[in-house]
Amino acid sequence: MRTFTAAAALVAGLSLTPIAWAQDHTAFDAARLSEHIQTLSGDAFEGRGIATPAEQKVIDYVSQQFQAAGLEPGGDSGGWTQAVALNRFTASEIRAQLTVGDWTQPLAQGEQIVISSRRPGESHVMLMDAPLVFVGYGIHAPERNWDDFKGQDMTGKILVVLVNDADFEEPALNTFGGRAMTYYGRWTYKYEEAARRGAAGVIIVHETEPASYGWTTVKNSWSGAQFDIVRADADERVPMESWIQRDVAVQLFQQAGLDFEAMKVQARSRDFQPVPLEGAEMDVMFDVASERVETHNIIGRLPGATHPDETFLYTAHWDHIGVGTPDANGDAIFNGAIDNASGIAGLIELARVYAAGERPERSIVFIGFAAEESGLLGSEYYAANPIYPLATTVGGVNMDSANVYGRTAAFGVVGYGQSDFDERMAAIVEAQRRVIQPDGNPASGTYFRSDHFPLAKRGVPMAYAKSAGDFVEEPIADRLAARAAYTANRYHQADDEWSADWDYSGQIQDLEVYWSLGHTLANSRDWPEWKEGSEFGPARAESAAERD
Image 1 (cartoon, helix red, strand yellow):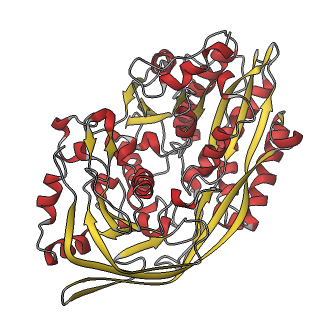
Image 2: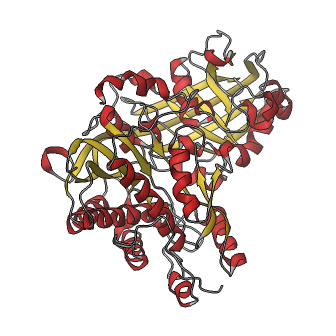
Image 3: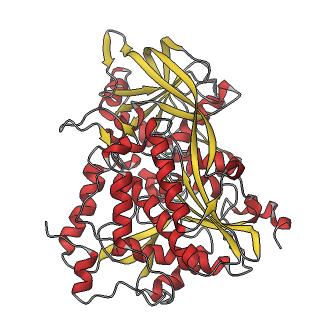
């Protein structure tokens, strides 16, 4: 493949500096971005698993870069970190099978099923002859007049649920806002609602399109240790959380006298009733080793000159999957170069550029969140225990998996229509001769899958946006192929590694948008607003009196 570097673009006489970028400010540096990504995704960092020896390496590197940039420590007790208390759960000796009459289907971990548990206090899970019931999408949404449970008792049962929500298969229903996924479609919600129902376990039927990722991603993400924030109430979790291959689910339904596709159609109706899988039972037993662990958010701060008690955030997660099962090449280190060493590299570069300029009126805080890959736990912990009050947090930008393939014609906004960040970013993007593009795949639920979400749901306006659309410079076909190959073959796999061929011009354009948005707000008395109808507006309104 032809190399497409920013340097080559400059040699060709192509400007990488948009009109919106102030010429008297320090420029973002592609070589620095590359160096940070290469270092953080190197084998020495062992896939950046949380609560592993690699974590201290990440903390040391990022905090040293923050300090070198000119930031002050922004964490607990004048340090660079915020301690995040978690429980780590490791399932082992997993044995499971489905039975319907004389039919038996053994379930091998990672092949037909992935099984885990995040229930505090469980050292051994044993569910014998547990009845199975199909509960459609497993959603209870009173405000949408939707209830998949219809008051039926789910205590002690294993719930079989579909991923996503009803509108994915039939957008015209518009029950959940069309094809764009709501939080009800996320796997996290399915487990939470099942726990509220007293279920013994959950089986989510994996289908690639509604999940927006393949079985390999499921296997890699859920076969290893699982984490959760420390919970006082064990009943907030079911004993068994699992995903099952679609083909196995189809067989199970068939043996129970049901047609899987027909059941999916029924599940799209408000009139849907839970359907017991007659004669179907599941046996599962496994050990659960649990321990209290501590991971850390990494935080640097540039105090504001006149309003230091008001904060604009820049965030990115530093963690990845760590060391897992070797792939076909024998590589067991999940390096996470794009996901998300690229975001941390951008965070460090933003810190350097901000600190090199005139001090803004409001404070700028840079956070490297932990445990994103474990369910947004670092950002959830910060949002629940903010070091800087959320009421006076102006807003922020979250960065996850940057564009390393070159400049694009559009700037994609995930969650477009939620806040007036849309219009604020549009003015900057248009000056770059790009256009704003609403989320091209809202059905994937991306808005609920990154670290801005715990802050947004508590009312803090957060932008989650980056390069999108067609590439603008040749070799366009090679760039498109590289971007598609990452999604298909490298995301959450050991092959997400740094490449010397990457072109950072697109990421730099995005960083300039992030900087311009934050810099303008940090030097104003503006408070960004949620748009009418946003589910996050009421939380922000509750704290209005704390903002001048």
